[in-house]
Image 1 (cartoon, one colour):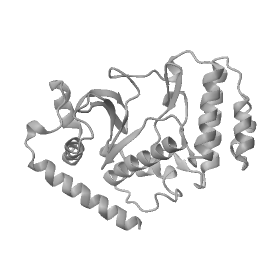
Image 2 (tube, rainbow, N blue to C red):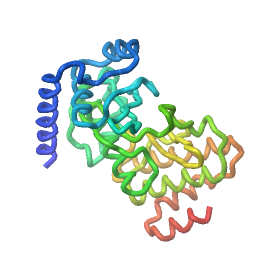
Image 3 (tube, one colour):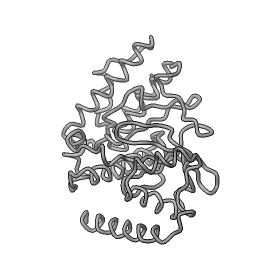
Image 4 (cartoon, helix red, strand yellow):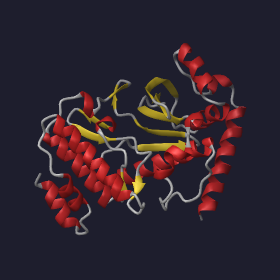
Length: 276
């Protein structure tokens, strides 16, 4: 079944690739800023560019406005649809996709047991993995960027922010006990209903849009069946507790949170978090 799905994805990519090549350049993805366009074409290889053209031609987005976030492994662009809806277009850099750095988040996850360790395959797997994780979290009711589409090493999702400006991170805003409880509740729902552990949770991948807490950056998230899931969950809780404690917010002891999240009886777990 996995082999069939993979072959179907590859056939879809090749068809989109051929279609994109037939389209005149003026109809392809256009960055409004000429300087950014030249940098864009220098950074990304031909296959990545063709993937973007294919997604644009399928209606995933109309054009890109420029970079809103840049890291060692990926860049996020502000995309706009034909209906003028803002989107985040995340492009995993194939040149930075080191399997050794990411293997602990892949090996042992039953959802991704077939892959190649070359850099492009790892980048494409990471885009597919993040899309899958976001979809599971979104369907479970966790507030995350809504996943829209993915192809190759490109992921398209909801833009969290206004007018092309991303929402502030927890680390950059005033936080409260209510924010802390929201994050802990999200971890609980993520574990119980989405059957996921974020595995890289900190104040740097949680948005605060007005009074709403939104968790993002799900590339590292693993299934609760992953052999290191409990270890990753403990690290997530520790990171969040450490941050809020530094801000003078009363936190619940790590051991108590872990025991409640791992509790098999959902009713007991949810009632506990509702009281916080």
